[in-house]
Amino acid sequence: MKRCLITRPEHDDTTHFISKWMKEHMDSANGVEFIDLHRERANRKEVTGRLTKKNPQLVLLNGHGSDTTVAGHKDEPLIVAGENDDLLSEKIIHALSCKSAKILGRKSVKTGALAYIGYDDDFIFFYTPTMISRPTTDNTAHLFLDPATKPVSALLKGQTVSEAYQKSQQAYKDQISRLLSSKATKEETAMLRYLWWDMKNQVALGDLQASF
Amino acid sequence: MSAREDDIKRLVIARLETLPPDMKVSVGASGEFTPNELVDHVKRGDPLGKKFIQIEMEFLRAMKEGLIS
Image (tube, rainbow over the protein chains, first blue to last red):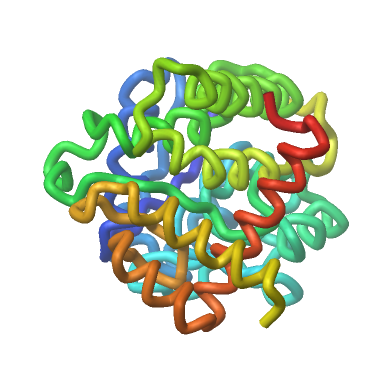
């Protein structure tokens, strides 16, 4: 069976929304064994142990990040460029995390990761705080998190990194086109530039023909 | 600050002020902010405010170059 490690910290609104969106993708995936490092389990010791012992082929990193790091629960650094990025060797990585593709993504691919989909700069999304108990039904968050999580569903279905990235880019373009049309509200139009920002900063690195 | 930067700042603030005040924006590790809080950052010209000005400027440049349609 295919094996996928996923980190889902949940210590603030950002990580809570992303965690719940990722859970939807996990629930709809078939034939995949998930190593679900949720909340406190999204820590460096667990990540190191599971990546080493279970050898998942796909790694979904969700959490705050920087150029060099993807963090876990309460912002504990999980994977750091030049420290332990070799843990990602021979794996496909999707990081829904700010900036991590810029150095960590490129470094991990050089070190041996098959491919890395992530963001070169801040990942920005709008949401409705009153929807915190139902994040996946928040229409505002949907504008951003639907295109951003498209690579996850594509990779889990066995599509190539290239296909996963293109699906996401197309979903961003479709949302942007809609927000440019007369159908969009002025609130949605004001969010357009941030959706474009996310699209522009999303990158796919490494072997784009790799698949899970 | 140049007149152009001042215009951009006013434009960013005007855009942010069209958003419902109870909405929030996640800016990764920088945190989560209401539109009004973002307006304050833009007015102050601190790193977060500068980031939103940078986004607006790059967006306008891309629009002008026909990269967004």
